[in-house]
Amino acid sequence: MKKIVFIADFYVNEIKGGAEICDNTLISLLRADDVKVVEFKSTEIIPKHIHLYRKCGFHFIVSNFTILDEKNKQALISHPNSYSIFEHDHKYIIERDPSGYKDFIVPSPRIIHRTFYSNAKNVFAQSKIHSEVITKNLGINNVINLGMSLWSDEQIKIIRETDTTKKFPAVVLNSTNHIKNTDGASQFCRDKDIEFKLIGSPNYAEFLSQLATGEKFVFFPKVLETFNRVLLEARMLGCKLITTNLNGCTSEEWFKEYKGKELIDFVEEQRDVVYNKIKEGVFGEKRSKNINCASGDSNVTVILNAYRRPYNLQMQIDAIRNQTNPPKQIWLWVNHHEDNKDFDFTSLDIDRVFHNDYNWKFYGRFAAALLADTEFVAIYDDDTIPGIQWHENCLKCMETQEGIMGSAGYIQTGPRAMQYYRHGWPSKNENVERVDYVGHAWFFKREWLPYLWRENPPTWDNGEDMHFSYTSQKFGGIQTYCPPHPPDNKALHGSLLGNELGIDSKATSNDYAVSHKAFFSQRDKCIEIALEGGWDTVKKITNFSFALENEQEKL
Image (cartoon, rainbow, N blue to C red; front, side):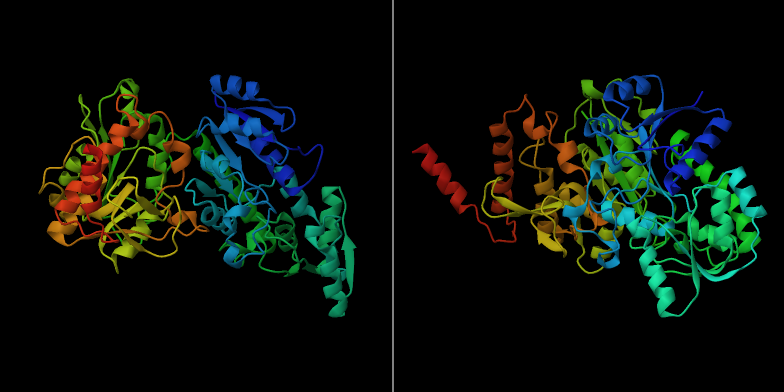
């Protein structure tokens, strides 16, 4: 039996707001479909409930969560894909409104709950513009546009039976909620000398009867509405609309096509479409692959790596399948370790698995890449989750700055491994930047791979990032770049959760078997050998100072 825990600040028996009405319809649809639904108010649930219900096979749907305790959010976050968010009113923004910013792009300091959204299995948006604004502000790839709100059979019946005889030139919503801007709509009518009537009733049938009496419905919201049910109800009742572009429903392509009875029929038909999207997103074994590719058939092979963090793989795969330029295939290179020996790799949505009984460390995946038959190869570290436009970002940069692309770009300021500064996701950069080498995510032409093998590296245990850039530059004249990572557009970033997923005891630099000093000593050696071999770094670093330091240490 399919099971859901539904979490919301309030339910329809307490507040008859648009979110609560929509939630109530969804819960009714789930129960009618033999889904067991347990309702919790945000103030009633505790982490113990979350852990127990998860163990019993429940998926969580979180609706309005303004008063949900942070401990509960962390209990959900700790198990990615165990919950979905039914997004209302832009709760990822401090002021819950992106309309005050150009192109609805909100500055990063105003973004909140980023990890809560990114770790969700699905974020259900209610309209096209709602979906787009979430995606470009959070840079996440798990947003599903439902494209419609939900009305029950009873509500549809009431709409159909409402008398639509017009009695007033205009009606205006009489709301105490300042964002509905009753004063602004009223003043507009007065300025235009339009007779109007204020309407409002807690009784749904009575409210619709009032709404239907207006030739026009005048509505000027102060925020970007995620959908706006009242506006659609007015159009179903034959009212002409005087409004702004701050309504999610008006962003849908069908909005101008339907009105009156045709719109009522369409809204009723779309209820099943919306419900099926939610059902597939929550219970479907695999999310449907994004087959949209701006450049036609995909020409990218992706290679992932499994060693000690196999639990990150599904999140990576979802992010990669949902790229605006998705790959032709995803391959997985598995290095032997006790942490992955019992993991079921057959459960993953991947095309090829290289399952090794040996730890080939960092170079193995680059060897596998030689077998790719695509023009481009993208390789990801096991803690790297890309934004949905990462491949598109790399391909666009290739048009003007052809070279190895990466999500974390390093520029050496001296001959030691720790002497650098970074571009990319750790520090952000508005423009493409030439760097000395890249890590975390690589994007390059497959034909450049042979350069990596022209010289044996100083060690097979470390430094593949440096060696690839050095040999590609030396033998192929290929430079290395970090594409733009603008702070206000995470969709372009090559890594969204680098700090959250990468800084732990399983990081190679923190490996108990290899001391921190030994790890960076190996990397120092890689840089020394590359500089001796003619590596032309951005800052024109030489190995002279490194050699001098070695001599001083001997003395």
